[in-house]
Amino acid sequence: MKSISNSKSEKCSFIIVTYNSSNDILECVYSIKKYHPECGLYIIDNNSTDGTQDLIASLNKVKTTLLPVNSGYAGGNNLGIKQAIADGYEYFLLFNPDARLNSKIVNSLIYLSSSKRCLAGPIIKDFYTGKIQSNGGTYNPLFSHFKVSESAPIRGIDYKLVDWILGAALLISKEIILKCGYLDENFFPACLEESCYCNEARKKGILSYIDNKSEIVHIGGTSSGGDQKYLLRLIKNRYYYALNYQNIFFFTTTVIESTLRYIYHKLFGILKKYPK
Image 1: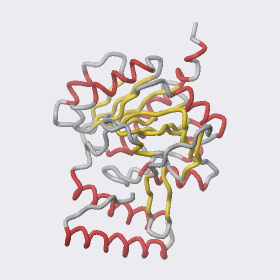
Image 2 (image 1 turned 180 degrees about the vertical axis):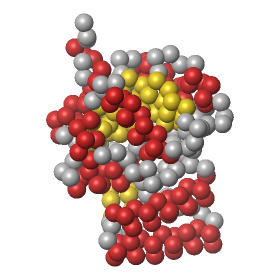
Image 3 (image 1 turned 90 degrees about the vertical axis):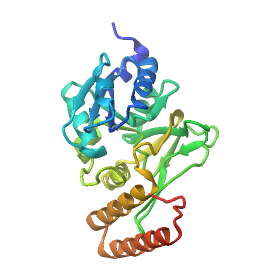
Image 4 (image 1 turned 135 degrees about the vertical axis):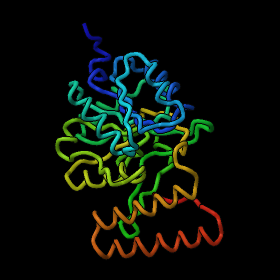
């Protein structure tokens, strides 16, 4: 007989996309098994070369897929979601390999998602300092900026409406997948795909909420390739977003602003806190 307390979370599967994540993946999986052993767990490896594949192959009760190429964050998650749908799951928690659970969060996220028919995510805190790393984010169409919010939750408020949710922990329901489709795999290898998904879902009436009662910890930046590579990838993906999801005016303003920022970075060698 199924436990009443786990009846909702048993409908959820964690989707983890790995790429050279040998330093993080085992602790990530152990935290999930500790707090949500009833959930499904799918790991999609994007052709790691650091031993990650050997580590995940040794895990029990985990469905692993070892890809011969790097399919990116979006490609890996899309594959994992499709596998989970085929196995009968109804909710999919996209979860980064450098993220950790420190409490039960799935039932609360599912309740928010089902009651609001929304995308849902927890508060994300820094693994080392405990400071808020992401409490959702805001969107500025003028420059195609997706800026992370680090504001503390308001006491007594259970949830917060945001423009988008950081992909380190993002709950998507099967209902939303059927309505909005999958992540855009042209954001490669990773950057802006979750922001774009939330933004485009809003155009179809699907809002994004942060569950103030749920939190995880997240290291962050473990696969960014450093500031220079991250900045180049971010600019490229912002160009793509503005060209394919905005009008010509916003595309032009995005190109001008992003190009000036890149020139500034090249001249002064300083990467300030850069909005997505």
